[in-house]
Structure formats: structure tokens, C-alpha cells
Image (cartoon, rainbow, N blue to C red):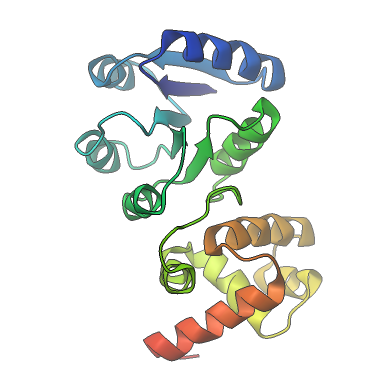
Length: 207
């Protein structure tokens, strides 16, 4: 499986390629230093995931990816995540965010989760805006499956009960919950349920 890594710093790309190859030998990292190179590679090769330097100017590139390559999940790499920047990427349908100071083991875990179809925003990324309001709005940005899991959690379901109702394993439920907690910026089931009920109340979701 191929990962397209787009970054302006060749030294960082080289280091990431070496380390990811050690941790994730089943993946091949192909690099591009600018968007022109990236577009050429996208048109000539098949990629499972795009790893994008979020500090590059990408206001036109990301919408192009959403339009032309909607099936390829995008993970954004940031030196430092601010609330404004994080909210921007949420609106762009980014599937994952990581910071460049994270360990390669953590980065590989995020990439594998995103490749498996799980939206992943690590706990290290904290919104500097009104956290509760942002989290409430984020419920609407969860995938349909994640909203189903969250709804059943809010009704008191255990992982096994949720898994049986959705016809998925308890382990898969656990992975979904980890992603949901990261996305909502909460630490436990009670906080997640509270945000869900607030969202239901504010948006008049019919049960």
C-alpha cells in the first residue's frame, strides 16, 4: 500500500520514510516536495492515504483533493495545532491530524486507524476556542457509524451490547469510541453522553 507524503522539508521526509518503513513495512512512502509533484504522482499511481504538511499553503489543494480524490483519506501533519487551524481542517473533511513531535509509533497508529476508516484526532490537540461549543458542533461531523455508536453509548449500552446491535465486534466498538473521544475532546463515556444529549436537545434530533 502506498502513502503519498507531501512536505517541503526533504530531511523530515527522509527521516519519516526510514522510520515508517521500520514500523510499517507493509506501506511504501512516496514523497513530494510541492503540490505540482503531488498532483503528478496522484495521476500516475494508486495511493491508500495522503500525509500532508499542514503548515504549507493548502487552501486550494485540499478542496481539489476532496473533489478529485474523495476516496483517499488525508492526514495532516502540524508543528503546532491551534484552535483556529484545527477547526479549519475539520471543515475540510480531513480524516486525521497529528503533530510532528509525536513518536513514530503513535504516528503509525494514527495512519493505520485512518486507513481502516476511523477518523482520528489525537488527544494532544486541544481546541483553544470554546471547547464545549466546538465539541457539541463536532458531533454532527462524526461519521454515521460513530454517531450510531455514540447514541447507543448515551443510552447506557456496554461495548458488547453496542456491538451486538450494530453487528460489529466489541473490539471494533472500542476503537470507534477511542476515535469519538478524541474527536469530541472528552475523556470518558459520561462526558461523551452529555455532549450527545446536549446535541440532541439543540438540534432536535428525532429518536
